[in-house]
Amino acid sequence: MRIEVSTPELPIPVKLIFPTSVLRSRWIWRLALKYTDNRQKETVMNYRNMISESTSVLEEYVRKFGHFNLVEVEEKDGTKVLIRI
Image (cartoon, rainbow, N blue to C red; front, side, top):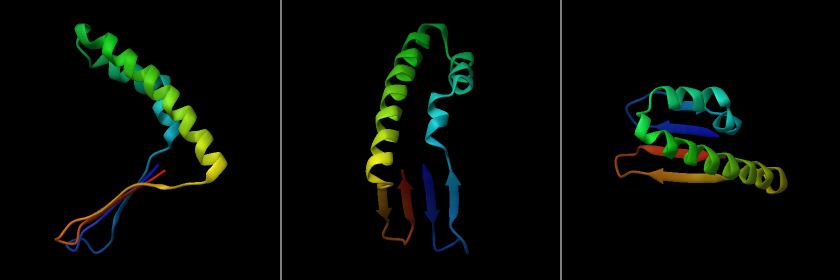
């Protein structure tokens, strides 16, 4: 996943590269559970399962059809946000 934000105030756009496979990483979910209240741990585990399944389907789609823009927004002030999978 690539996130790009450009504004008229900045001379160059801000680009963040975030591998989609990180969403399935055990380390990320352990970190999320570590900083979650005990009563919300079940919710985090439900999100983990849902995101893991969704990520697998998304990666299969990208392999088959190629990358695509998930979000492309342009504000009136010239700020642009692009999220590309």
